[in-house]
Image 1 (cartoon, rainbow, N blue to C red):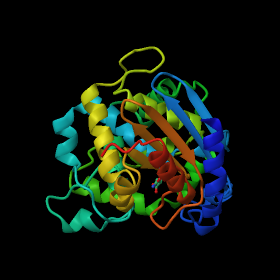
Image 2: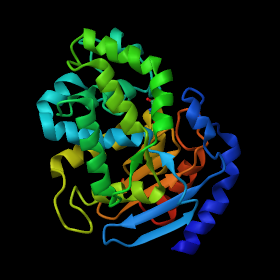
Image 3: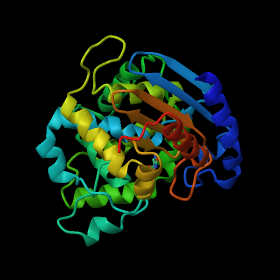
Length: 305
Ligand code: GLN
């Protein structure tokens, strides 16, 4: 397996030059554009790595899958889905166009920025700090990495430049989708996006989802199966934003990307996969990471369809 993974990483390095680093979060410009790595964690607990699997990057939108499950646990399905929809948009992840033009006004799904900001505001806690602590503790548990931390520079960079997210959040408060304090809710969202991980960490998250919410090492049920199922379904329909349809055809398993260059995938009943490659395509997905997943899906026969 290691030899195969090593070969895939080397084969796909040529794609790195075809993409770019995101400009709208200045701190992400410091990423190593040439980094490329992959980790696999099977639900039996076997791990395989290749390339730059020790490279640290911020989790970004991959965190939206986890905040959704925590909000569902805290507030229940009917509360969450009365405020956030279940449909793909076909628009970029940070688009705000449908927020006002479609009535009643609610973000289309929890994987686009607007939906994810609303979802993070629903996590129970007396303050923003309490909510982010709860999120971080949960991430540490499911990654089996008690050392996970928030990258303060990335967080501050997002906070300083996140005017589009801020605009959408204030709009959602106006129409009643968000009831909490806006700056507090944005702070939770910016911080959750700034959690620093490696491919191994996100592969553990994928394995936890692939195992329906039961910890693959301790056997403990950490999340209700229903909420894990909802999360994985959103990963299929909206996980790669307006690239989700093509991804379903070419790769064919639940996955979630982030602008830090990571992609977290859950192959149901089999394994979690984490890839990193900070060079992104025009939709904000890791350009070489996608190619690695395509290869893995084909050669290991992983499509669920
Ligand atoms: N923090 C990023 C943002 O709000 C997350 C986007 C992403 O990873 N696609 O724009």
